[in-house]
Image 1 (cartoon, protein in one colour):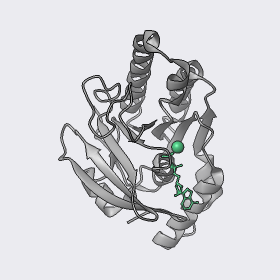
Image 2 (cartoon, rainbow, N blue to C red; image 1 turned 120 degrees about the horizontal axis):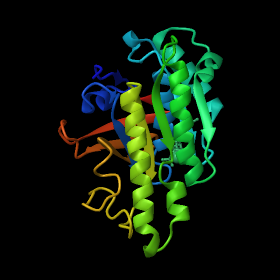
Image 3 (cartoon, protein in one colour; image 1 turned 90 degrees about the vertical axis):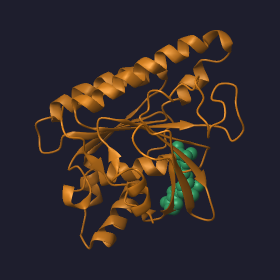
Image 4 (cartoon, rainbow, N blue to C red; image 1 turned 120 degrees about the vertical axis):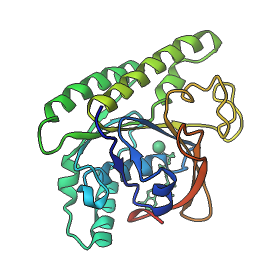
Length: 249
Ligand code: ADP
Ligand code: MG
């Protein structure tokens, strides 16, 4: 078993809440309502993971499965510029974009197929100077929710999602990479997900995602991130800001 790596979020409190940062060899679930900042956090981690270790990165590259067409190269460029300012460096956004391998998933089966292709690409990059250290699936659940509607299909959906998650966990283990998945939930309890703030026994991701982070909007550009039911860390909350330059304290 390889030593677990920690990936900086770029935010002091957020990192501390996570015991240093987002861990490799684990799945971290970002969940919250539309607009709560899940995709922003995913973009920021896709940038940060490329930083050298002394800057909190893992010197790695990224594979992102984009199911809602929300990946924005321009947003990555803004965040890289933000980091250049913060670190007093002259990072090249194009360099960062080169190491983010984005695949668009058109339906849930395609999404599952893409995680197999992700394994192949990660294998190719394994012994290069840019191994894959981060897998992102944004959104994990959107296609599944749209395609499997009605009670009769629930078991099937759960089984497919569970297998998909296990595949992702395996990628994390195999490549010593962090795995980020996003999951949009409703503000009110909903038939499938229940109360988003209190994962119940039947919660589909509750048992598989090692770190569950509940995001919600606060004043202005502020977001509250709550760590829920971690096996080895105390529950806690931290406040981050989503700014033009990226995530900040
Ligand atoms: P979701 O949880 O639905 O994925 P997003 O991560 O897409 O939500 O968050 C969208 C929010 O992020 C916007 O409402 C805005 O507050 C913020 N945001 C997005 N892009 C920028 C930007 N370039 N500069 C500042 N804030 C931004
Ligand atoms: Mg999103």
